[in-house]
Image 1 (spheres, rainbow, N blue to C red):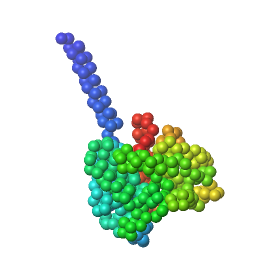
Image 2: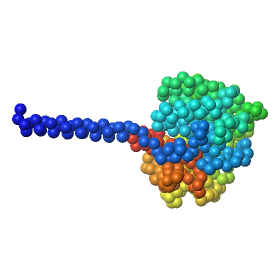
Image 3: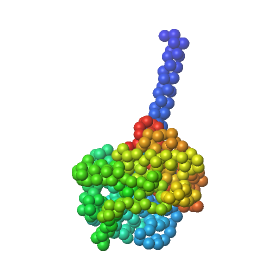
Image 4: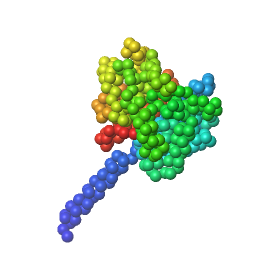
Length: 372
């Protein structure tokens, strides 16, 4: 064989080999999940030694049993962390959260303590409905995704306890005090988690009339021309509005309504107008004057607004919101990736942005509207 032909063939084979190696490396980089700096911040600085998520970066003494402080842990945070693990298809991260649930948060009566001390001990005898629904929704989704019977069994046990203890006049209520055996007659509308209720119905935990009761409650929800009420008084069948509107509550209600096809056109139009004019969204508004009640911005508000924008297939608004949100994220070495202000932060001001960041990644990578 002529030498020059051998050389050309050798060069061709070598070239194809190099392309194959680089192609595989590129595919590996695309497929390998690189943690967000915010995830790293939460793991390294917002996680207690026992694996529970601290509510605040800075420790502080517990002031009252009904108020969270310092490195105390919330069931709310656990549920959001579970949702993040599911969104990233990270079974290992999810299972770590599940072990934290079983070891620390799950009571012998199969209700979820809404708050723990930093060392994992419970000093409360109450649950929180919204947190419970988020957790059981995540458990059933994980069971359906990964085929883990244990997740389903725990979801069933928690749901059975909820249904046996926390219903007043046909509605689940905000909490039940298992020590005093008392429940209020109120339902916070941000707790009406339609994704969770849909899974409860699909797994035979509630019947169609009960599911439809919550669906109709949200679809027929009144507003004051812009904002939604905060509480539904079950006995009186009345709604209560807050004078100072927390956008987090409003956005969660809008997200739950979007889950069942409900529109929040007035609220979204208002927020878009505010953002276009201010280039930011304040965390609270005065309900009557429709003006900002505070000057601060909440990263959680941006995270929830992004999730809502993607749910409604509005990626351009989501992109604008994310640009603003990321400007609030720390680039200092000691807090890198965290949403830290005055050397402190609340964990949900990191978890909601993290969920939004993952939702944006999924939307861009797969071109799919978010559905949870």
